[in-house]
Length: 91
Image (cartoon, rainbow, N blue to C red):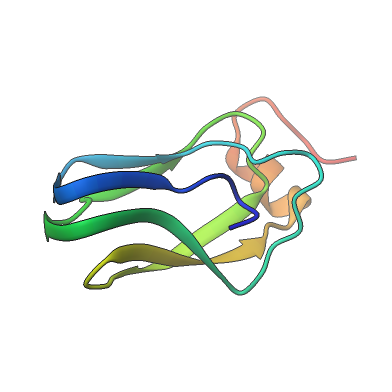
């Protein structure tokens, strides 16, 4: 995965709460699908997701597979992203 080194859980991953998406390396180029986590098996799922500072990518379509969590990663429109932030405007 170019997004980052996916988290690997040996055995069963019990998922719940919020998935926080952090910024990838500045050299990152999105592919259509990225692996976010590998696991032996999983139960549950994330209820929502948030984005850390510097994330200009949209992560959608979380897919909980039998051994991996994958997602669709696309580039965000900077002007649209800025419009959602209080006190920030795109130039």
